Length: 117
Length: 115
Image 1 (cartoon, rainbow over the protein chains, first blue to last red):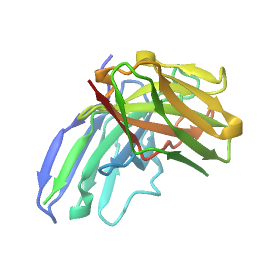
Image 2 (image 1 turned 60 degrees about the vertical axis):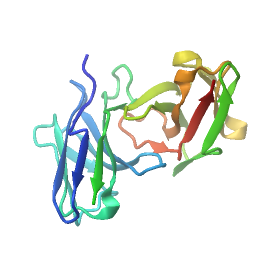
Image 3 (image 1 turned 90 degrees about the horizontal axis):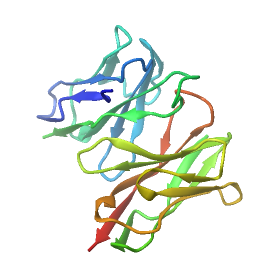
């Protein structure tokens, strides 16, 4: 079974430019998460989706960040415009539904390392 | 509300010696606790998890952790470190039996293994 897929793995952009990250969760996982991990810190949740609905986006900086999961499968996270402080690793994770094996466990992708110059 | 404190940001051990990574948690609910490992340029991998069964949890690669409610701790141990154990380790708390709930990560402990 394929794991969570993210692309690109690395991205370097200049400040004020837009950037987008893509995530394809494990097949059958209805819940999808985007996290940001700053250097030397643990990941912090940005947004959680249940199917195509964003059920928790309280930590998403909505002035410049947006996300979508139109068909309830893959998802895109966008930053526009990027700032120097956005440099971080952006992680995507997915989890099975309640009642399924491993419910409550999150499976992480390798992340996208963003560098803003 | 929930939070996690990893007491050491860096731990250095010699190969073949025991590993202890300390974690204390705080939760308003009955918690589930996890340890994840992150190797450089790799995704987070689940080592082990505590939900509600045995308080001593065995995970992959010889790691184990003990849930101690009275001490609000969930320390990670391994009897004998291997060079391949060098990585970043994260202690994580979430609300028990709540699929899709937010994970709260500790700040991480970087484990270094000397030959």
